[in-house]
Length: 420
Image (cartoon, rainbow, N blue to C red; front, side, top):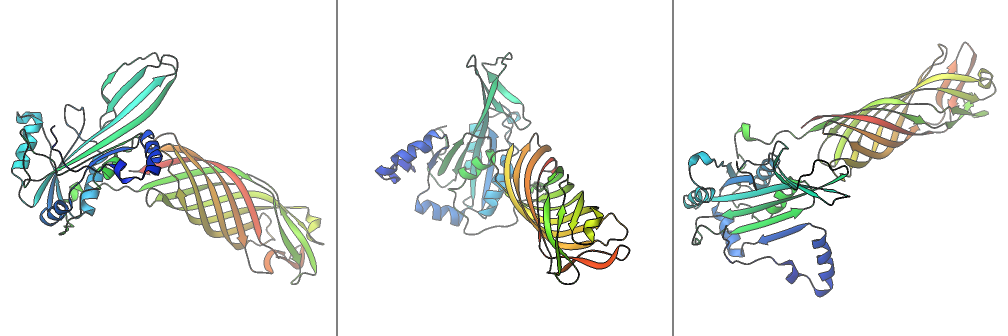
């Protein structure tokens, strides 16, 4: 495709000499971009006149001109946020004309209130063998299959895979001069990155298009709306809770102080997480553990160990650091309730307020399954002199709690994901 000579955004001219080294480092990091910008006058004219953008997106190298399914929602979202009406077009070879002629025909018939946007995308998978230094290059289509490959060697034993992707956006209007063989874009931008995040590349490629001065909010029918992106995670976990202690005393005052020691044991539980966006989840879960309590007070120490069940009911949230599609470190906090139920018909159960902090890392084995490793600190809070143990059968003197309880655990879990 021929491109007319226009003003270009050259980052080298915008950086002082002392910043050249930083720029070179950014280039070497393989996050590359090229941009043909609109003049100030053209931005004002386009934002004021264009109401509707006709969009054609396809995969570079695909003879069927099919689009990436991931690219379409990002184009829809970006143009919608900029206030434009939009319509997706499809080229088919059955029309009997070349793609260039088909495109020029659409641009020639654009109204003053219309523009044509061409978005070309590509994801490349590169893999190499440590011993032979052979490479395999694939261009991936929407189904995940390869359109073509070269230098393929099926006998490779150790293969390292790297992704790279790019998106190129070109915007055309019908009030600009044409080239000898077609129209010149008023705006074009190319974004490249060593990843497979094609949605991010599309978003960056469209950033230079100005927002409409006459925003339109109803863009397409309900059948063309972006699919729901909410993802839900169910996590079953089991771990190890360290031993902990709490100050207690017999009687309504601290005349007979003592210590209640909670033995270490294995908690297990189930957690539900609902993804609000890329980084934030809201969570709710239940955790349970059977353990033993030794109480060192004049009367209760005679009972040696008291078997009990601990339960936590917690709600909270996580902040996820999405390192890549397979790895996600996270931190979070929660609040809720702590329930202690002695396995003795004569001791009563108690409820306390609980809060917690946790952090860990998630490993996703596939789109639906993964596992996690987590460390958690739970802090059980109650009023001073709160009830702890009491039995009319054993003794008529209550045992009250005089300090909060900190319980620390580590656990592993299996993750099941549902949703888009």
